[in-house]
Image (cartoon, rainbow, N blue to C red):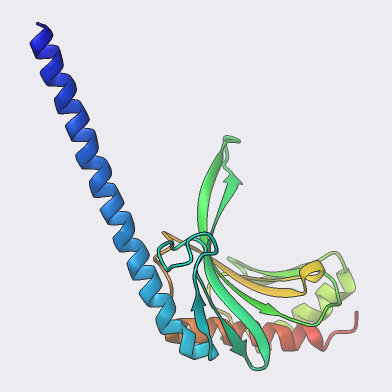
Length: 194
């Protein structure tokens, strides 16, 4: 009986080892794919891929980013995992692809959100919202699936889209479309009086 328990225990430990080893190999492959995709984006922004600060090497989809400039503004792009509350109140993790343009400080927070009826402007200044919504038809052809927000305290214009994993880095053409959408949003909101 003791021998049977020992054999079962060894089998369970061996099985757990194999599962974890397979999981680690899969995760490593995902990180390698993400790193190669980030490297392909660097020329779009005349930039480079910056490794995760803790590791110093391109090994983690979380923390590695591409950084450069787009039309004179500093830009960075990376995957980001956040905890969001679910309908039952428990947090669940969502991974986003984020592109950030650093701008001159000033203005108010605002957000462009895609809804079924089209794009909507969210901000605390109702006059600004109305003026921006009049300008949206010119912006609509450039908008791509996701959300665009300006965070005034950080002077960052951000594009976010949910992705399945950190390896879901866009192809260069889609990345360029995301950058163009940010540029269009920047030009519309920059023309509005604050």
